[in-house]
Amino acid sequence: MLKAVFYARFHPERGISVIHQYPNGSIIPSTPATARSPLIPFADISAYIIPPYELCNRSFSICFNGHRVLGVPVSLEDARYSRNRFTFSVCFVLGEDERDAYRWDRLVRKTAVFFTSLEEEDGFLSIEEELEGLRWAGEDAYPVANIGIVYPVLQAVVEDLNTYHETCVHVSDRHVLNLRLDTQVQRPPPVVRPWDVPLIIRELPSPDQWTWDLTLQRIHPHIDGINHIKRIAELADVELKLVQRGVRNLLSHDRILLLDIFHFQAIYTLTRDFAWFVQDADMQAECRTYIAVNPAENPLSTSGKPNSIAEQLPAPNIIIDLYSTLTPGLTLHDFTLAHQPQLTNIDIRRLITFGVIKGFLRRVHKYALALSPSTSITPAFANPSPSKSSKPKSNEAAVREIDKARKKAALSSGWATPPAEPPLSLLSSFGVEVGSARSAEEVRTEEDERLRGFLDGRHCLDEVCVEMGIAERKVVERVRSGRFGEVVVFGM
Image (cartoon, rainbow, N blue to C red):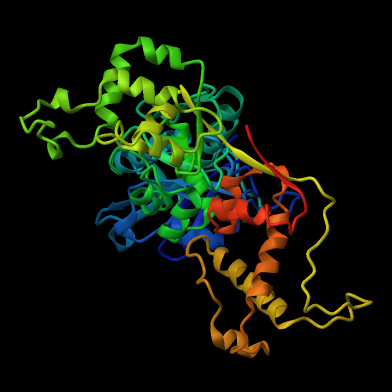
């Protein structure tokens, strides 16, 4: 839903200002004040609405205060203008959770081209600013009926697109704005979780042909089918939520697939679609090429004679036999050891990935369920206290409180993740003993308390490993150590 449209200008005397807005009060508070409050504080985003000349004539997208602003700032250079330039921007305001902002971006671009032609051909925009009786957004008696053309255009765009998903606005015989919103219902992309692994299946167009936001530019080099979402956020130094949003955008355009984390403790099993693979010779040929180790590296046969490329590819019957042995209860580690001769020229990661992509192989996820009653793990060094409020904060608690506040402040900027440890000067200012370090038992107890929250049978071990930063083998060893009572690890 289109929430508002506004027209902003860099005025030689007033600076960056909103001249027109619809609905009234959506960006600049109306006078006299009404019940409507502005959607976005314009002063906080004005530098992006009218950027430096070098950044004009290209689209932008800003997410702020729960809303998304799409616009194309235009800068026209001519000696007839004050300072030899006329700079303006027409912006659409949507909800930040708008499922597909790309379809709106096309309308914003077309509207910017329309307003540019109004000014270049007939000077409608600059002439309107000199009209007697014109009121700007936020001034008394705004808007004034029958004065100017911009406000009626904005009104028609908002009302018609929200009601009919299209609009046709006649300004003159030569200037007609036609907009149509693509209403094709798209399947909402799945939830992107921190432990998902994105794999690019269709190359992204160049930034000139496609909308690349700053997040996508930073995370694109790290999307390799190996790194999970949280790891990508760490490598790109981008907030996790922004990475998830960017990956969802790629999913909605069918540019990537989400895979599971690859490791040799994972278990895979066949689906009913495996029969399709067995009967499809073309898919088998595709699989042979995809999973084979570079044939150029193995030009000789076992007899020492040169082999053709086709002879170096794994045989179809070997591939089918390998897939057939992937059963529940068999880890990839055991599978690799049992079939080491057949896997000589096969990339095991690609072997698994191909089956998952084609749908005849699926991951068997492991879950942990604590059967004994949940009891907190109390460290031996903790002294009982009759009143929680009377207990002074420990050195570790103070560090955690400082670290939480520091991360919240750093991530509020939307970009860089904070360093792993707070500055020593910050710890000292809060009275924390810098030289003190937690014992191994304290660290172990704190990690066990976190781990206990995952032992309800609803969190797969991939999630536990990513959140805890521990390998699956160590997680299984911990949950079976007896510190959590009786724990069952099962797959499904």
